[in-house]
Length: 305
Image: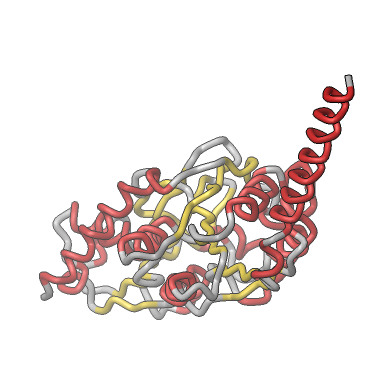
């Protein structure tokens, strides 16, 4: 009987010790990470990005116990290099920029992706022209100016060049000028101002696009533009964290993000403008086709004029 009591007492002590060790382990990442950095590349102006994601950083601070700082990256390359150096812990990538990160050895893991309002797991690259312009097809734009976004943008650079090549068009030879605008909003503004005659951009559906967001901010009127091209479906944009972060920290980030629509609906509403469904889990394998796409575009560049 005494032996049984000693065994029970010993087991209880071990359980308590393991529980304390587990609790300490669960909080151990706080000793290493005094701050987490989330990077977002501005598809809109900086103030718009801050307003959109400030609630998310506060939410993640509450969930992880670690302050989260929002960094607005100058461009996709800056976000990639920031994660490569370990200075940026979480990035909201575009598919092509994430594929570029993986292709160039960044140790990042995709953990979630966007879902459109109708449940579509992707979006499109489109070409806009002014509504009152005479252009009906891309072929009508020979010798005119094309506005692209950023070399690491999926819908604003890589897919447009891929789509043009499929039509037998070498952008540098076909267009009078190919201009890099730096952001999706800037591409629309360049078209609006007449700097370019056609502009690449992202488009989800008739209810949501970069142009529709700009309209809601009184930056442009969607009725002033029309589509002359829409690509095949592009995989949704991924959210990715550093692969070598502690497993418990990554799990908290992932679980809280996948449930932000339920746990912090106002935050989710602000991030998506109410134009999306809850985020879903994803892995790096999902973006293998995009790695192949950017490899194709890289080879186009190597061919030169």
